[in-house]
Amino acid sequence: MNTDILIVGAGPAGLVAAAELARYGIKVRIVEKTTHGADDPKALFLWSRTLELLDRSGCGATLAAAGHKVTAGSIIAGNKPLGRVDFSQVNSPHPYALAQPQAETERLLEAHLASFGVKVERGSELLSFTETATNVSSLLRHSGGAEEIVTSQWLIGCDGANSKVREALGVPFTGHEQKSGWLLADVRLSGLNFPATELVSFWHEDGYLGFFPRADGLYRVIADLPANGGHAPAAASLEDIQRIVDQRGPGNITLSAPTALSAFHINERNVREYRQGRIFLAGDAAHLHNPAGGQGMNMGIHDAVNLAWKLALVTRGTCGPQRLLESYNAERHAATDQVFVNVGRLTAISVLKNPVAQITRNAFGSILFGLAPARRAIADTLSEVSMGYEHSPLNGSDDRSFPGPGPGERMPPREGEPPFGAGSTPRFALCADLSVEVNELLETYPDLLEPAVRLPVSRRCIWLVRPDGYVAVVALDPDVRVIASYLNSLTQSAL
Ligand SMILES: Cc1cc2nc3c(=O)[nH]c(=O)nc-3n(C[C@H](O)[C@H](O)[C@H](O)COP(=O)(O)OP(=O)(O)OC[C@H]3O[C@@H](n4cnc5c(N)ncnc54)[C@H](O)[C@@H]3O)c2cc1C
Image (tube, rainbow, N blue to C red; front, side):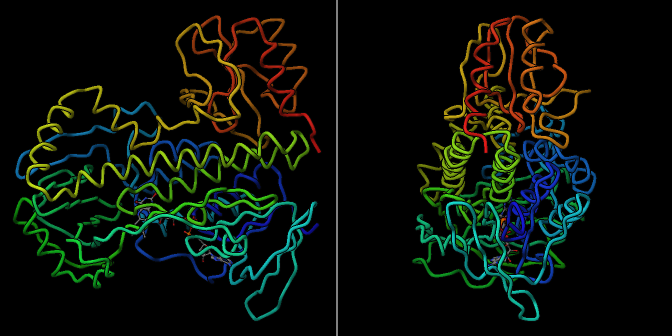
């Protein structure tokens, strides 16, 4: 075996998967067919939950220090403020949306990966692979033309929308492309009377217009175009976007010095299974999101984190493959479906063209945004902290008789404690009062449990928290049998 795991593609999903596996001591190689990092104007925002997940390996703070913290989002309908969502209220160590060009995010993730001794093999392309019962043989072509066959236990295809891995598996990438197009510009602008810590969306009768501040003093401006029968939108010019800004914006905003101008269609696609045997798909290779929703890169990073701790436990021989690895598709597919629904709704209401529908939307919107719990729920959804795995087959029993998160829900990170899943071993955490029974658990499962307990959320319950910070089991203290049987179910048929 040349390596435990071969990762194809060094975009955000591949880089995070490689770094997570490397810090857990798994032998990993990551190949990337291009010789340099991406420079397209792609993802701008890292959301709170993504940064929390990256905190587990010590990388969230580095990204946060480099990016620009956006703490609120406003919606203006016509000339009237309709609502304002305050991200600073999100219960997270990162209560903001972090604006950072994707190229910079990738550069920092690659440096983070290098800190675990793994270098991206640039100029190396996956050409094909074959799978047997015990391994995967992949044919690579390196820059200069030399070919190599790499044998690995597992292969992760993080090779983007045109994934070779997905194509070779022959799995359909189904979905739809919307008829209308969008324009995107990264520009300097003057005349916008909102702080640079705020996203601003205009719901105009002609369509949507959004201003998103970036780390470097620039703004990303996006707008939808009228339906044009499904033709690809013509390449954007600064004049096109300025015209839309003049028409839909508050007036007196001037755009200049564009660093990127592009046009895109919304193209949402998904594969049915993110795993086939020893092959996994993650990120855009598995699901393609509406760029206007700002979730695609974040979702790829969540895939990588979800898969890495499971694969690490299986590869180390601590857990059996079945239960853990089967849960990857169940959990991540459901999360993708939910994001498609959320972003689809938000996009549809933002681009409404029917005047009657617009009046209804604006009336309903102003009631909704007037309610603090609704504003809070919107902020939690956008920042992904309310996202979880409530219906996961990996969830254990729920004996909650006191307040606190249930199985599949995120356990919020706590101040003064290391993040759940930190360190060089993927371990579950026990949030419990110390007792004889709890001590016995710690002694029986040293490979699976953190050596020390953490404070429970409320007394008389014990929370078992997964290495990615989601609750696995809630037991009634001191009945630890449900936790023991849960852990036994994971270790069964360990390699
Ligand atoms: C205009 C635009 C705006 C966006 N804005 C946002 C946003 O604000 N927030 C957000 O979360 N997302 C956003 N996205 C989506 C985001 O850019 C993608 O979801 C993200 O890049 C996916 O990451 P990935 O690692 O899965 O794939 P990619 O970034 O596509 O990386 C795949 C890598 O695999 C390599 N590769 C491909 N084939 C092979 C092979 N055979 N061998 C070796 N290497 C290979 C490629 O060269 C590439 O580097 C936006 C996208 C667009 C287009």
